[in-house]
Image (cartoon, rainbow, N blue to C red; front, side, top):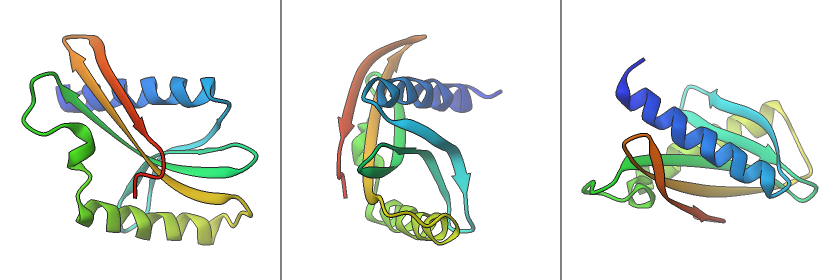
Length: 117
């Protein structure tokens, strides 16, 4: 496993635990369509969350939340449309972003943005 993959997995796992603590049930991880990938899909009684997780090392040039560019947002929306066509729901879709910062093997920062775009 590459360092980049290990770093991403660490951030996703931290975000999954956070969402579960908030009362969400994880229904998918790393769901793919021809347009891209959604890192985490989670639900509660009101929302279906489509979560993009960005994990960065401390001192990096671009904070994780700024790495979700308009082009990335468009791919996420298209991927979400594919998911929701395949798995229709009455729940309100919400696009969230989790920004995880690491230093060595430790999580040193976590920011969660609801309705990020």
